[in-house]
Image (cartoon, rainbow, N blue to C red; front, side, top):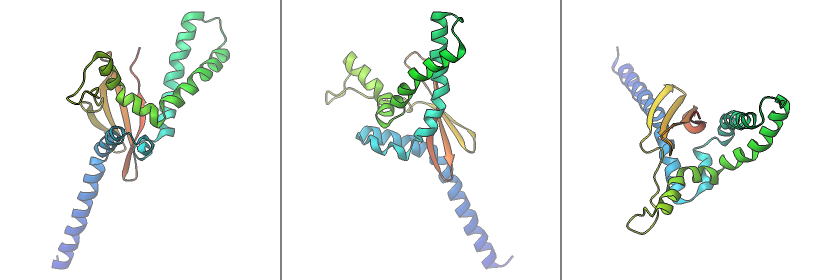
Length: 180
């Protein structure tokens, strides 16, 4: 093998390794980006790290199923499935839109700061301490395009944050709520 060919192969291998390293670090960069945007209060920038449309699509069936179960639990199964579905959509859609908005995501991630403020847990500056739910999350790649971060909610049940890759970028695109 000629010296130029060896050098070319080495350069290509190095570039490939750098690209794979960047892709592997991508979900962690997205998590850090979300944390930094929320900490700075610039919620309008969350679009850089969150795919709001996919996140809504991920949450909609979970929320609707919970609402339908609640309605059926109170009314019995005598109500028509169509009527329950219509009521469920009417209730769920505004709630999902509020949850999956820049302010809703910020509230989700800062929710523990509110709870700490109520309980009087503050830092040296007298501000409520925010805890990042993704900070101690168990993380792993489920596939080359799906990365999950699992954290416990206030009741200790697992909430799974799904990050999906599109090209070289990763965004929060799904949320698996804990079973009731």
